[in-house]
Length: 264
Image 1: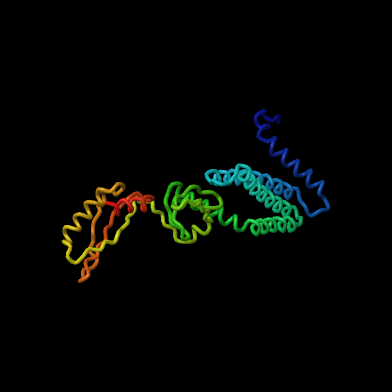
Image 2: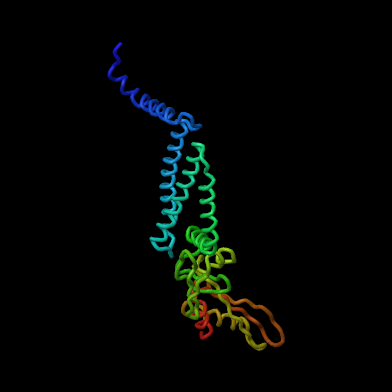
């Protein structure tokens, strides 16, 4: 019986694969390695190469928005990640053909341990920097209070949060420390409240004083109209009355606006 032309096409590849495996079996006669072992080892290597490219691409996307790292550093991290995946695939391939993959696994583990020890502080700050930037808890231009310092965020990078203080200093706060300790963002709500303590004599008309203080604070430049300034009576006694003036202003203008209110 003559085979139809179309039937040959569907059988060519299976027959070729089977013949190739048979040839491998014949070549490996006398050993414990089978042709299928080699096939699966090759498949493991191919999968490892594919996964390494995916891992490199994923790392590139993760590092795309991370400031403070040069393009060369980002590419180096991607390549190291890819090679670690390939080495793992190579170890699996060697074990599939009955070889000893322990040296490669030991090499891989040793490389990871050495990198972890050498870059321990850098890695912690780098990971914390990614968390800070992806979470969006702070951004450039915000006024923050962290690690006992207060200032404006100038830069977020892979190592630190760069802050400019009110007195003109530039501070580099380690990312890992910033994320571990309490962090206050003064700019999140768009305004901050300040207050002044005021002492009135016992003979003063308190209602008149409160009205005059509130009016003066309202007219001071930088004081927000909403919420409006208000005065609270703290204590009253023979020596006089203690008042507290509370007013709102832009987050980073506290000292300046307070000085204007005092002058008013």
